[in-house]
Image (cartoon, rainbow, N blue to C red):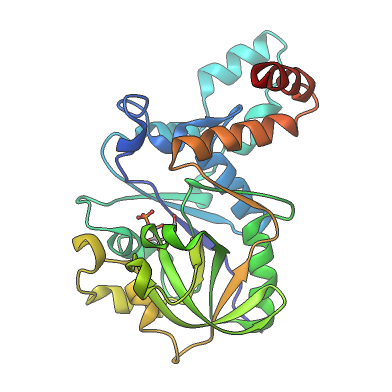
Length: 288
Ligand code: G1P
């Protein structure tokens, strides 16, 4: 029996400079894909996987995320008084037992951001979501990972193949034995030069990790880009605990890039009965 995954960490302190000026006054995690902000998709994916507590590692200027997951009393009351349907807001309410916020005071890297949540995570396995990795599919990526976790336990990361020339932007795995969607991880390296990359399988922003990673992060030296890297901390756990990669059965959109963000919007719009026809007709017209 594995300990259940009850908590998820969402590192959301990043500045979002790639989307300026859109992200000057709003967090990049609040950019909408059609009509839901990116962070909402990640939280919904966590909930679908049975996760109960959402831990946001935030920073200055990220208050909109807290407001988003709060009750908007005036809005709800006004809408209710006017007989409007407020069910659309249901998924946005996270009660006090279901969310926690902690600040990363300095931009010292993903590993440091996760370590900032150590006291709230405590001594249990937990999930991590990088919200700009938009995982589109059903069941969701984390649900698929939790299902795999109940079989193999230990540590799991989601992976996908990218063209080899792109590996230097990511964490890359050295793959061992594969069994269906599960692959053993025998090594991990963050942002390697293309020539040194052990494969073209990259870490795609979803993790299930054992709490020992927090102890490792405690003493983790700076790595790629002069930042404290989660990948480096995970690498030291290989061989001590089971470590597997899960290939997501679905589509991933890199919403940290503008092209990926537009693709995600189109894909979601095409799946919406209320707008698919109009968007498709327009896209066909535009391509003429
Ligand atoms: C982070 C991780 C990297 C992972 C990537 C996925 O990098 O460090 O291992 O592959 O997210 O998007 P970042 O995009 O923060 O540089």
